[in-house]
Length: 182
Image 1 (tube, helix red, strand yellow):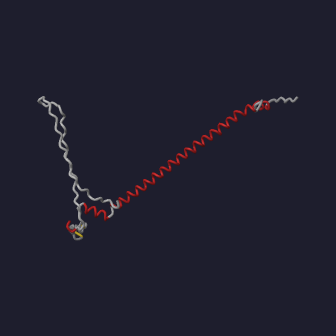
Image 2 (spheres, helix red, strand yellow):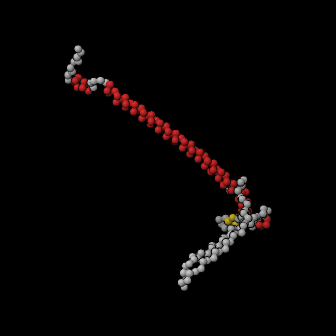
Image 3 (cartoon, rainbow, N blue to C red):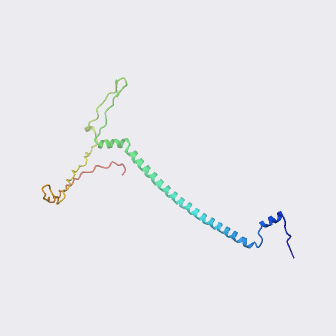
């Protein structure tokens, strides 16, 4: 005969806050909540890990692209440096038929001439043979074809036009390549 004593007042109000009955029924939702939270956390970690892996692959691809573009930039810079070297400029100028200039003269602010001007060297004094570079031939535009069967102002249809003979341009020698080392 175990009988619980009756509570009164403040103790009775506090006792009503605690559940009465078996504790087994209250544990089931809590266990399900914990399992769902753990499962959701694991799935979240899996998604986060795969996103980080994808990002690292993209980063690796971008680094490879950057390296190849940097190599290409350096190769182009070497080409620019080779073309702008004094020897290359002099050689290309001679190929175009240019000759070195003479001694320059300068004007002072008061109008007097400083230095003795000299004439440019003769083309015959250049020891390097200069290839003749001819401009490409310009082909005349073909006449517009006349549509067949169109009536003339007199009302009679025009006969079909004969095709124009095709002209082939004469083959020209190509100038030697000026790219060094290729």
